[in-house]
Length: 393
Image 1 (spheres, rainbow, N blue to C red):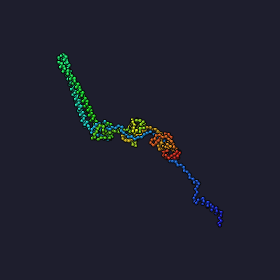
Image 2: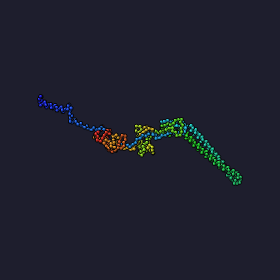
Image 3: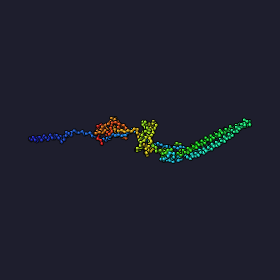
Image 4: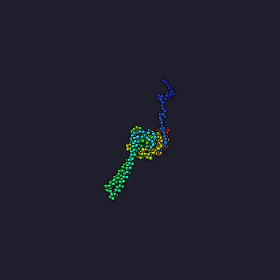
């Protein structure tokens, strides 16, 4: 039987305790690592810009058309064959000077010649009637003198009653002849007037055969060609005065009372270019009962070469203009049914309930709830809540 020394026994017990503590090779965690430390809340990176004063407008934008204020559809004034057409599309014409077209001038020239001859015949007939009247008047004076002489002789008893009666009948016939001669002269004068009227008509028909430009401008349409048969009222050409252009558009009926000709302004844009500010010069007196719209027009004073009749244009009517505090429209959110914006101060986002006004060009007018210069969150605002930590980029 072995005998162990006290030192050996103490060493053996220490080894046993060590093996038990190590748990077969696993380490015991340190007390401070047993519980994880909670991470701090991360700040949301946002962008902000100060609320500032801007010009806001209550306005309406519509699409319209540019039109010639003065134009003319030139039509045939008489029937017949279109003999000559002197102008074409794009040609410049001058009012009262430039000849446009002519319709069958030969037949109208012949009619004028006949009318002139008929007038000459009527005038000659009048001369004959007047000469005949003068002759009858002279014969009537002779018959009256004979009657007076026979009347004295009859009273003295120097002639028979039969001779006196013959003188009386001759006097009465002479007076009747004067009446007939006067009627013939009157008839001849009326025939002369009739011939003069026919001549005037023939001259007018010949003048109508050749048509000159009624207005100055340019030929924009040619609707007939030489050789075609014309009738009164058939349009041959269209002329537009391109120096006088106006913009026309149709507006919803609810704006009728807000448009005042001579006062309401509109901004014009042709294509992508600004064509200046203009004034409404016309408002239709009625509203279309089917479409519930009305027409407006405004003459363009300074649009320059951009103003070409027939072109589309954008009209922005300005009903009210004022300066107000504004923020980008994207910064305005709806929370709890009310509009709000977030203001970033000292690394914290604060929600501000606001009252909005007009909206123009991506900006919203703030009527209350915000002060000028306050930094309004414009990017990242949709992820914010009141009191959240933010980092302004």
